[in-house]
Amino acid sequence: MTFIDKLKHTALTDRLLRRPPGLYDAAKRTIALVDSYSDTQRAAWADAQLKKTLAAARRLPAYNNAPASNVLDDWPILTKANVMGRENTLVTPGLFPKSPGATGGTTGQPMRVARNQSGVAFEQATLDTLCLKAGVDLASARVAVLRGDSIKPPSDTTPPFWIDEGPRKRIFSAHHLSAASIGSYTQALRDYAPDALFCYPSSLTNLLNLLGDDASQIPLVFASSEILADDTAALARRKLGAKVINYYGHAERIVAAADIDGAGMRFLPAYGHVELIPDGEGAAKIVATSLWDHGQLFVRYETGDRIRVPAHDPQTLGLIARGSLPFLGVEGRDSEYVELAGNRRIIGLNHIPRDVVGAASIQLFHAGEHTLDIFIVPNADFGEHTKDVISANLALKFPKDVTARFVLVDGPVREPNGKAPLLLRRPILAQVKPHTSPELV
Image (cartoon, rainbow, N blue to C red; front, side, top):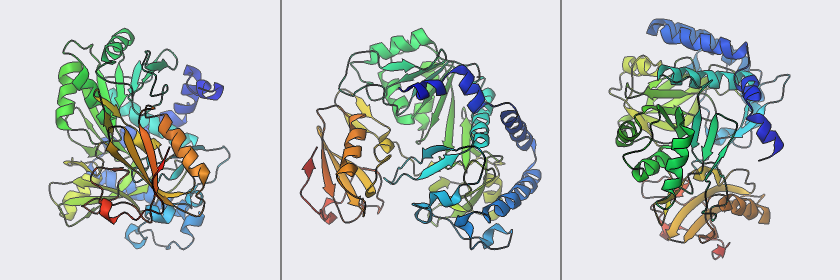
């Protein structure tokens, strides 16, 4: 970890960057106010915020041809394909530099995002508000993390499998969690005694399945970035004595929803404006618009996600979109992991395409116990550097005994349902047209 990385995680820096006085306090007040509104009040408040968003968007290059209308339906749908490579045209002006980030890349195509200080403060206020409703004050809590962080080389199987970032944050490696290492994890959790565990559902499932029934108690589990199964949440309550927050959000910071300990999944009305469009298959597509300047403005952005809803009439969909009614769950975010011997799961696969230049898409297929195929659709910038970055990213996740094979293909590899996910489970290999023979790395 660099000096700058360490500086980011000191208590003072955390307070100044994530909970800056003024911005953070105003965000918390707004969230509380909108939460207290009736559905009619929420709709009126969102309309007023939308007018500000649309006015600001018209000043950005991405919306040069935007309509003069403040009726959202008059604006075109914005897709990821429209934005890829043009992310800077959505960036809002400001005096201070913005923090760079990237979307999860679950399709193998991460998108660059930019975040300003007010957006970071609003995001933190959102998380703090949710956790406080579950009985944990994040501002003073001891937090354990079990997500996709790379703590040490995957082939290093000696403890510790965690690092401490200051006195109140311990980050565990999910990639080293196995039947052989669970004793070290159990003791480390008992010694650290966290108030909250932030995790991917896939890593939580693996942890719970490996833990004994005498595991130490953790008051809160905050699961995000993947679909959380009901039985996993129930197991967390039983084994850890935890309240469970199931959180749905986006790196674009335009839509969020949460279920606090089984009370029902609801959109957060102060976070972003949601449109629900029936997909004709019993679900509804999520289209979202920024209500706040987080560093970029997205208007009618097609998230690619769908939710299960109890009914498709406009009134019900409107109530759900404003967080006044719960919905049945999010589709399209299945847990992605590669399972190796010894109950060892490699998660956080969306990190593999990050910072890669020269690939229109990247997909992974666990072809055998020690073999991983990397399907790459090259673009004009493809070169040895493309494979070098992918190899470096793979080395942070997979042990040395897993051999990766690069396969250049004409287009994304599809599964029987027509989708082309980052992690292929059932690829239609007969349709794959490789440029070259597989290249071992």
